[in-house]
Structures are given as structure tokens and as C-alpha cells.
Length: 201
Image (tube, rainbow, N blue to C red; front, side, top):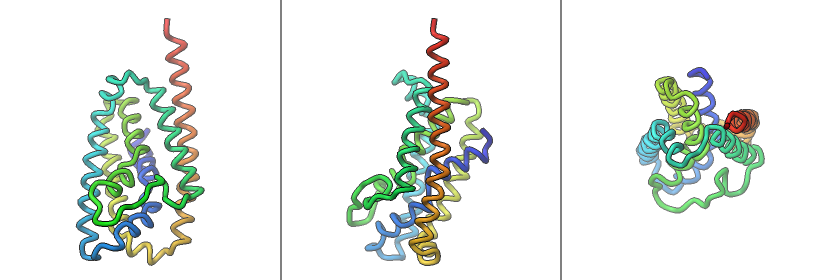
């Protein structure tokens, strides 16, 4: 997978456009002058979590004795479920969580809206497949995070400019694309797990 393909996949998984309504809703009772500071802080926290999983993911897999095939299949299932919620929205949002009042810290903006389970699983899978290409995955992650950050920092303006219906339409389109990626990940994971079983003496 190229840097562009990995960055695009991570961008779809992070889903900054689909998260705009959630960000606007969470920050609606906070003074507008604090929005940018809060978003920058949460984006940095999310980046730390994502980079940590990128480099520690394979060790977590080794400790848990989880194969690459199992991780691929699990990542595909997680992506598929999230994609379905993007296509068929639920009242409480993609992650089905109630938003607490007050200024957010780590939860839910940094985790799970930016550094969500699908993004973490995707990074672990990329590193598990090609550990030597860690520079490629890091660049892809930084690119996806940067573009997502620019979009989320403009959440208030984009929400007013695009309108609710346009945001919903874009989120559903991204959900459809993510569904295809999820199915491919699931198929590849099952195939890899099958090959591992067949070659076991």
C-alpha cells in the first residue's frame, strides 16, 4: 500500500467531515474563543494515541498472541460496523455515546472521535503487515491527521456553509467507500488466517 492509499484510508477512518456535527454539538456551550484551543489540544492528544499504537501495535499483538489474519478480520468487522452507522445514522452518533456537558478532555473528541477503534486497528494492521515501512505509515498518518485537523478546526464555519443535509450526504458517501475497504480487509484477513492454518504442520 502506498503512502497516498494509506493516508486516504486513515482519512476515511478518522472521518473528520462526518464528525463535524458531533464537534459542533459538543462545543456548543463553550465560548467560541476557546474552541480552537480545545481542538488543537484534542488533536495533539489524538496524535499521541495514534502514533503510540502505530509503534506499539505489533508488540501488543505479540503479547496477546494475535495473528495478522485475525487482526485484519477484526479490523474489517470494526470498519464495517462503523461504516454502517455512517450510512444509517443513529440518534447518538457513530459511537452511540451520550455527550457530557462541560469542556471535553480526551473523551470524546480525541478518543474515540479522532483516534477511534477503527483508526487504531488500521494502524496496528499496517505496521503488522510491513514493519519495515514504518516511515511510510508515519507519513501517511501525519498527512491524514493534518488534513483532518484543518477540517475540524473549521468545523463551525463548514457546518454553517455546507448545512446539515450536505454533511449527512458526505458522511454517507464516505460510509459507502469505507464499507468496500472494510469488506476487502475482512476478506484479506480471512485469507491470511486460512493460509496460516494450512501451513501449520
